Length: 266
Image (cartoon, rainbow, N blue to C red; front, top):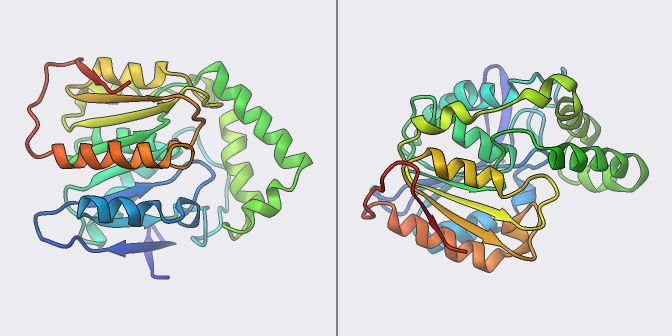
Protein backbone atom coordinates (compact mmCIF):
# COMPACT_ATOMS: atom_id res chain seq x y z
CA UNK A 1 0.00 0.00 0.00
CA UNK A 2 1.46 3.42 -0.90
CA UNK A 3 2.32 6.00 1.74
CA UNK A 4 2.79 9.75 1.81
CA UNK A 5 4.71 11.90 4.30
CA UNK A 6 2.68 14.76 5.79
CA UNK A 7 4.14 16.84 8.62
CA UNK A 8 6.89 14.28 9.05
CA UNK A 9 4.46 11.37 9.51
CA UNK A 10 3.88 8.47 7.17
CA UNK A 11 0.25 7.99 6.17
CA UNK A 12 -1.10 5.02 4.21
CA UNK A 13 -3.52 5.66 1.38
CA UNK A 14 -5.32 4.04 -1.55
CA UNK A 15 -6.11 6.08 -4.64
CA UNK A 16 -8.31 5.46 -7.67
CA UNK A 17 -8.05 8.22 -10.31
CA UNK A 18 -11.30 9.60 -11.74
CA UNK A 19 -12.24 8.07 -15.11
CA UNK A 20 -12.46 11.50 -16.76
CA UNK A 21 -10.91 14.88 -16.06
CA UNK A 22 -14.24 16.51 -15.24
CA UNK A 23 -15.19 13.90 -12.62
CA UNK A 24 -14.39 14.65 -8.97
CA UNK A 25 -12.47 12.51 -6.51
CA UNK A 26 -14.32 11.22 -3.45
CA UNK A 27 -12.08 11.63 -0.40
CA UNK A 28 -13.06 9.32 2.46
CA UNK A 29 -12.46 10.53 6.03
CA UNK A 30 -12.90 7.74 8.56
CA UNK A 31 -14.45 7.68 12.03
CA UNK A 32 -12.65 8.08 15.37
CA UNK A 33 -11.61 4.42 15.48
CA UNK A 34 -11.54 3.86 11.73
CA UNK A 35 -8.98 3.19 9.01
CA UNK A 36 -8.73 2.28 5.35
CA UNK A 37 -9.59 -1.36 6.05
CA UNK A 38 -12.70 -0.58 8.06
CA UNK A 39 -14.35 1.11 5.09
CA UNK A 40 -14.25 -2.35 3.44
CA UNK A 41 -15.41 -2.10 -0.19
CA UNK A 42 -17.70 0.90 0.32
CA UNK A 43 -15.38 3.50 -1.31
CA UNK A 44 -14.91 1.36 -4.41
CA UNK A 45 -18.64 0.73 -4.72
CA UNK A 46 -19.51 4.41 -4.42
CA UNK A 47 -16.77 5.43 -6.85
CA UNK A 48 -18.07 2.96 -9.45
CA UNK A 49 -21.67 4.09 -9.03
CA UNK A 50 -20.76 7.76 -9.43
CA UNK A 51 -17.98 7.49 -12.05
CA UNK A 52 -15.68 9.30 -9.64
CA UNK A 53 -12.18 8.78 -8.38
CA UNK A 54 -11.55 7.80 -4.77
CA UNK A 55 -8.91 8.58 -2.17
CA UNK A 56 -8.98 6.70 1.13
CA UNK A 57 -6.35 7.21 3.81
CA UNK A 58 -5.70 6.37 7.45
CA UNK A 59 -5.00 9.41 9.59
CA UNK A 60 -2.02 9.66 11.91
CA UNK A 61 -2.48 7.14 14.73
CA UNK A 62 -4.76 4.86 12.71
CA UNK A 63 -4.46 1.80 10.50
CA UNK A 64 -0.92 1.27 9.23
CA UNK A 65 -0.09 4.96 9.34
CA UNK A 66 2.44 6.09 11.95
CA UNK A 67 1.47 5.12 15.50
CA UNK A 68 0.22 7.88 17.79
CA UNK A 69 3.10 9.08 19.95
CA UNK A 70 1.37 11.65 22.17
CA UNK A 71 -2.00 12.48 23.73
CA UNK A 72 -4.50 14.09 21.40
CA UNK A 73 -5.46 17.71 22.01
CA UNK A 74 -8.96 19.19 21.98
CA UNK A 75 -8.07 20.71 18.59
CA UNK A 76 -7.05 17.43 16.93
CA UNK A 77 -9.84 17.58 14.34
CA UNK A 78 -9.01 21.22 13.59
CA UNK A 79 -5.37 20.29 12.98
CA UNK A 80 -6.42 17.51 10.61
CA UNK A 81 -8.84 19.74 8.68
CA UNK A 82 -6.77 22.92 8.50
CA UNK A 83 -3.23 21.52 8.19
CA UNK A 84 -3.00 17.84 7.29
CA UNK A 85 -5.85 17.44 4.81
CA UNK A 86 -4.95 20.48 2.64
CA UNK A 87 -1.33 19.30 2.46
CA UNK A 88 -2.40 15.75 1.62
CA UNK A 89 -4.73 16.85 -1.18
CA UNK A 90 -2.09 19.15 -2.64
CA UNK A 91 0.59 16.49 -2.53
CA UNK A 92 -1.68 13.90 -4.19
CA UNK A 93 -2.98 16.45 -6.76
CA UNK A 94 -6.64 16.26 -5.70
CA UNK A 95 -8.61 19.42 -6.46
CA UNK A 96 -12.21 20.29 -5.53
CA UNK A 97 -12.99 16.90 -3.98
CA UNK A 98 -16.24 15.58 -2.62
CA UNK A 99 -15.47 14.81 1.01
CA UNK A 100 -17.18 11.71 2.42
CA UNK A 101 -16.77 11.89 6.19
CA UNK A 102 -17.93 9.55 8.94
CA UNK A 103 -18.23 10.73 12.57
CA UNK A 104 -14.90 12.46 13.39
CA UNK A 105 -14.21 12.41 9.66
CA UNK A 106 -17.47 14.27 9.00
CA UNK A 107 -16.51 16.92 11.55
CA UNK A 108 -13.11 17.27 9.86
CA UNK A 109 -14.91 17.76 6.52
CA UNK A 110 -17.03 20.56 8.01
CA UNK A 111 -14.02 22.35 9.50
CA UNK A 112 -12.13 22.02 6.20
CA UNK A 113 -15.01 23.46 4.17
CA UNK A 114 -15.55 26.25 6.71
CA UNK A 115 -11.87 27.26 6.74
CA UNK A 116 -11.67 28.84 3.30
CA UNK A 117 -11.42 25.69 1.18
CA UNK A 118 -13.90 24.91 -1.58
CA UNK A 119 -14.74 21.23 -1.92
CA UNK A 120 -17.30 20.30 -4.52
CA UNK A 121 -19.61 18.86 -1.86
CA UNK A 122 -19.76 17.23 1.56
CA UNK A 123 -21.31 13.88 2.41
CA UNK A 124 -21.55 13.55 6.17
CA UNK A 125 -22.40 10.41 8.13
CA UNK A 126 -23.13 10.88 11.84
CA UNK A 127 -21.31 14.23 12.06
CA UNK A 128 -20.49 15.91 15.36
CA UNK A 129 -20.78 19.71 15.59
CA UNK A 130 -21.03 19.86 19.38
CA UNK A 131 -20.76 17.42 22.27
CA UNK A 132 -23.98 15.88 23.56
CA UNK A 133 -24.66 13.87 26.71
CA UNK A 134 -25.39 10.86 24.48
CA UNK A 135 -21.91 11.24 22.96
CA UNK A 136 -20.24 11.07 26.36
CA UNK A 137 -22.37 8.12 27.45
CA UNK A 138 -21.57 6.23 24.25
CA UNK A 139 -17.84 6.85 24.53
CA UNK A 140 -17.81 5.92 28.21
CA UNK A 141 -19.60 2.68 27.28
CA UNK A 142 -16.97 2.04 24.57
CA UNK A 143 -14.27 2.35 27.25
CA UNK A 144 -15.91 -0.39 29.28
CA UNK A 145 -16.27 -2.61 26.21
CA UNK A 146 -12.59 -2.11 25.33
CA UNK A 147 -11.57 -3.10 28.86
CA UNK A 148 -13.83 -6.13 29.23
CA UNK A 149 -14.24 -7.76 25.79
CA UNK A 150 -12.20 -8.81 22.78
CA UNK A 151 -12.50 -5.35 21.20
CA UNK A 152 -8.70 -4.78 21.46
CA UNK A 153 -8.11 -7.92 19.39
CA UNK A 154 -10.76 -6.96 16.84
CA UNK A 155 -9.33 -3.46 16.44
CA UNK A 156 -5.89 -5.02 16.20
CA UNK A 157 -6.84 -6.42 12.80
CA UNK A 158 -6.91 -2.88 11.44
CA UNK A 159 -4.46 -0.81 13.51
CA UNK A 160 -0.72 -1.14 14.16
CA UNK A 161 -1.27 -0.30 17.84
CA UNK A 162 -4.94 -0.75 18.73
CA UNK A 163 -4.42 0.36 22.33
CA UNK A 164 -2.86 3.70 21.39
CA UNK A 165 -5.50 4.21 18.71
CA UNK A 166 -8.35 3.56 21.13
CA UNK A 167 -7.07 5.55 24.09
CA UNK A 168 -6.03 8.47 21.90
CA UNK A 169 -9.67 8.81 20.83
CA UNK A 170 -11.38 7.80 24.07
CA UNK A 171 -9.26 9.84 26.46
CA UNK A 172 -9.74 13.17 24.70
CA UNK A 173 -13.48 12.73 24.21
CA UNK A 174 -13.90 11.95 27.92
CA UNK A 175 -11.59 14.79 29.05
CA UNK A 176 -13.52 17.53 30.93
CA UNK A 177 -12.15 20.23 28.63
CA UNK A 178 -13.58 18.48 25.55
CA UNK A 179 -17.16 19.03 26.76
CA UNK A 180 -17.01 22.58 25.37
CA UNK A 181 -15.81 21.45 21.90
CA UNK A 182 -18.02 23.05 19.25
CA UNK A 183 -17.57 23.75 15.51
CA UNK A 184 -20.82 25.59 14.77
CA UNK A 185 -18.83 28.73 13.92
CA UNK A 186 -17.60 27.06 10.72
CA UNK A 187 -21.04 26.19 9.35
CA UNK A 188 -22.14 29.60 7.93
CA UNK A 189 -18.86 29.80 5.98
CA UNK A 190 -19.58 26.64 4.00
CA UNK A 191 -20.73 27.32 0.45
CA UNK A 192 -20.87 23.83 -1.07
CA UNK A 193 -23.87 21.45 -1.04
CA UNK A 194 -24.15 18.97 1.82
CA UNK A 195 -25.80 15.58 2.32
CA UNK A 196 -26.05 14.81 6.05
CA UNK A 197 -27.04 11.32 7.23
CA UNK A 198 -28.00 10.28 10.75
CA UNK A 199 -29.22 6.98 12.15
CA UNK A 200 -32.14 7.11 14.57
CA UNK A 201 -30.37 4.60 16.83
CA UNK A 202 -26.96 6.28 16.80
CA UNK A 203 -25.31 5.65 20.15
CA UNK A 204 -23.03 8.69 19.82
CA UNK A 205 -25.29 11.51 18.63
CA UNK A 206 -28.84 12.71 18.01
CA UNK A 207 -30.70 14.29 15.10
CA UNK A 208 -29.82 17.68 16.63
CA UNK A 209 -26.40 17.36 14.96
CA UNK A 210 -27.62 17.29 11.35
CA UNK A 211 -30.51 19.66 12.09
CA UNK A 212 -28.02 22.24 13.40
CA UNK A 213 -26.02 21.92 10.19
CA UNK A 214 -29.11 22.32 8.01
CA UNK A 215 -30.15 25.54 9.74
CA UNK A 216 -26.76 27.17 9.27
CA UNK A 217 -25.76 26.37 5.68
CA UNK A 218 -27.03 27.24 2.21
CA UNK A 219 -27.96 23.83 0.92
CA UNK A 220 -28.29 20.67 2.97
CA UNK A 221 -30.20 17.47 2.31
CA UNK A 222 -31.01 15.41 5.38
CA UNK A 223 -31.34 11.64 5.39
CA UNK A 224 -32.76 10.19 8.63
CA UNK A 225 -32.51 6.41 8.83
CA UNK A 226 -34.52 4.05 11.03
CA UNK A 227 -32.88 0.82 12.24
CA UNK A 228 -29.51 2.49 11.91
CA UNK A 229 -26.80 3.16 14.45
CA UNK A 230 -23.52 5.07 14.14
CA UNK A 231 -22.36 3.65 10.78
CA UNK A 232 -25.05 4.18 8.12
CA UNK A 233 -22.82 2.89 5.32
CA UNK A 234 -22.74 -0.48 7.12
CA UNK A 235 -26.20 -0.61 8.72
CA UNK A 236 -28.13 0.64 5.66
CA UNK A 237 -25.58 0.19 2.89
CA UNK A 238 -27.87 0.08 -0.15
CA UNK A 239 -30.00 3.04 0.94
CA UNK A 240 -26.89 5.07 1.73
CA UNK A 241 -25.21 4.18 -1.57
CA UNK A 242 -28.32 5.26 -3.44
CA UNK A 243 -28.61 8.56 -1.57
CA UNK A 244 -24.92 9.37 -1.95
CA UNK A 245 -24.95 8.51 -5.66
CA UNK A 246 -27.95 10.73 -6.29
CA UNK A 247 -26.34 13.57 -4.35
CA UNK A 248 -23.09 13.36 -6.32
CA UNK A 249 -25.05 13.32 -9.59
CA UNK A 250 -26.96 16.44 -8.54
CA UNK A 251 -24.06 18.59 -7.44
CA UNK A 252 -23.23 20.19 -10.78
CA UNK A 253 -26.72 21.19 -11.84
CA UNK A 254 -28.81 21.66 -8.69
CA UNK A 255 -29.68 25.27 -7.80
CA UNK A 256 -28.56 26.66 -4.49
CA UNK A 257 -31.24 27.32 -1.88
CA UNK A 258 -31.68 30.22 0.48
CA UNK A 259 -29.58 30.10 3.63
CA UNK A 260 -30.79 27.70 6.24
CA UNK A 261 -33.19 25.80 3.98
CA UNK A 262 -32.90 22.01 4.11
CA UNK A 263 -34.21 19.29 1.83
CA UNK A 264 -35.31 16.30 3.92
CA UNK A 265 -35.25 12.83 2.41
CA UNK A 266 -36.93 11.30 5.44
